[in-house]
Image (cartoon, rainbow over all chains, first blue to last red; front, top):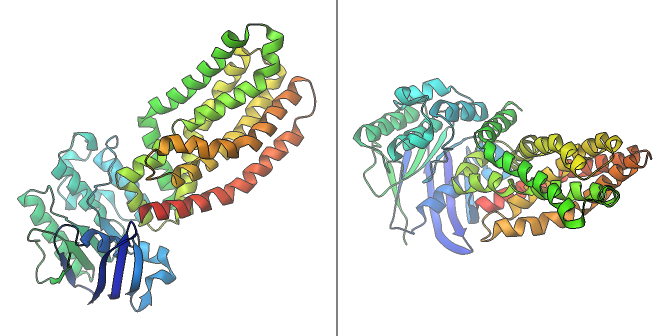
Length: 198
Length: 221
């Protein structure tokens, strides 16, 4: 269970959001809405334990995540707006090394996002949508219960969006929590929404 | 520990693909050593007198070259965020980066150092001491360098700031490293100087990754 109470976050010394409260049980999803600059990315980074918390508390299963930031980091699977890929490595090498860091199987992750034909291709030659799929595959490694998705559908084609929908549904069926931000309709069924004011 | 070695393995694989960076550092080192005979004249007596210091300064400067990309590239492409949520302690991430810098830049410089020494008419009996002292000294530099690189992340002129921050900290390494080579070339015992370098390494080994880890975290905020 992820609970935010009166959470406020700042970036570059400026308060970007404040008074955010929500409580997500296992299997629930939350979609963040708001105009550009409303603080969706900053909130996701705070939920990941990366951003600076200006005020309020964030708790996992009732325990403040500040007590043990490393344990919280090990729960998080983050899909940022950067894909965090190295052009010199192949798709398989990328996910193989990630799997050593996080656990899980690179082969299964590649199959799940439909990249088997490109497994031995260097990331350098992939299209933006294919790179996004590699970043999606990283979410599957290591059984992370908290998925944080920043504009996950950017660059994905219709089939990619459908894949994302299937992965998110399967994750929630396993009891995982998803927080996602988007301007577009996300393929996430009966999600709760949170609108951030600019 | 498996995760830590996984990170080292990934970064070494990347360093292999970017072998040009290592070659550039080694070429810079040999060129810098090779320029001195042109500057101060080919007299072997003069060259042998300055060889220890020149080889050390050239090696320190060469080792700095690939430093800012090692951490800066991860910062810019989002990899640093992914590493910070991998569950590894930030200090462990920094230590892995330091280990990779030493293996990918320090060790090749060790292998090139005897050639640099010979170009400067360094007595052959001083070569083993040079390599041993550089092995310890470049490891200290890798650790200090990662701390400096982490501190200058996100700074607008980080590439310029980094040497200004790190080079003054390397003065003790330079003093004892050059002294070890001087001692060996006149037949004095080398071990006291190596012991001092070892002590510097023992101090940098826990402190530099801790400082770098804090800097990595605050760079991601």
